[in-house]
Image (cartoon, rainbow, N blue to C red):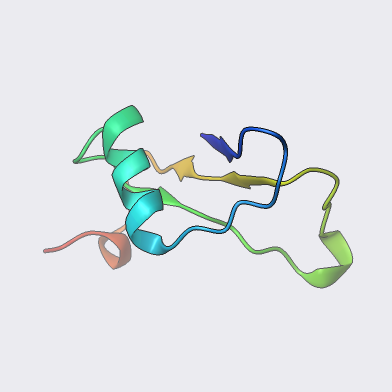
Length: 64
């Protein structure tokens, strides 16, 4: 899922806003992550945030 601001400005929102968007567009019971790569692999060409849905999330990411 890509999160972007209208007008192309930086996406400056808190965890709660990203959680609300994830729930609304991917579902409340979907596990999603945001990835922060090693600095040498950063591609920062647009003001987007990405949430990736995790299929069969490991127990580390889910409640037991």
